Amino acid sequence: MWLVLLLVGCTRGPKYELTTSHSGSVDHGYGHAVGFSGDDVAVGAPHGVGGGRLFVGSTQVLMGTSGDFLGSALFSGPELLVAAPRYDGGRGAVLRLDGTEALSGGPGEGAGGHPVLHNGQIAAIHSGGVSAGDEGWAETGRLWSLVSATLMDGGSTLVAGRADGSLVGAAGVVASGPPSSLYGFALAACDVDGDSVAELIVGAPGWGEVHVLDAGSGFATTQTIRGPQGFGRSLACGRGLWIGSPEEGVGGTVHLYTDVDSAQPAQSIEATEPGAGLGHAIAAHGTNPTVAVAAPGIGEVRLFDDTRAKR
Ligand SMILES: [Ca+2]
Image (cartoon, rainbow, N blue to C red; front, side):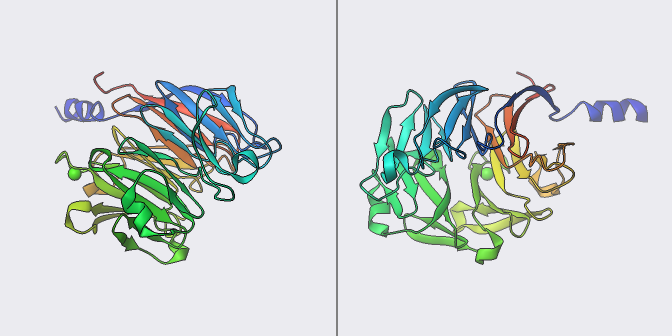
């Protein structure tokens, strides 16, 4: 009887398995950023000669000009938005998949990093602030060195992480850690307690921590998940909370948490190639069972599917 119960227990919960992998040039930074365009995985390769590239799977679909860093960040929304922070000689732009400009910055603004679609308008977060579309942010003034962003409340609230370890919303700083913590280096909004309201998930890879914040009670920290240095470098919400830990194990590890309270991952996937950096970037989208995990140290993006969940 116990054996039967154990077997039943083993079949519960997610079980992700590798289905596909795509590869590109390590020198070009293939896998620095990942996202989805519909059901297709999009991969940014912002480094190397030529100003950066965007791939759908292994196929190059966009190429920048020198200094663009095209593909340094992606936003997977109703359409894919591609950051080209120094697009066209320093203007900065947010590009669509067809190469047209969804947003272009002014001279020297360097717009185009970490684009998000916020209240139907693009907010392009860049080294000098947040441009376009959102009066609350415009009134906040210049917000230096933003490194991440996420949307909450069904897309109506924008929260961004700064390089100094502070999180900012339209009303100002909502939480912070010391610069060495890299608090806010990655952000996501996931409902981790099942009440249909998303919590703000904050990666602090300098500490090797991920914090769960209750946005409805002044962004109080309700849970801390701890790992080794680099844990929390990337975050994604899919069928659970995905946390990237690219310095963990031989070649980096990603963890899936379906019960944050237990602080034990439901599944962990480790790369066996030394220095692969698996978990540098992660993308999941909606209820699609596929998750994309980047290993830029070997120029790979791996797609995993939940083989046990009901489709
Ligand atoms: Ca919740």
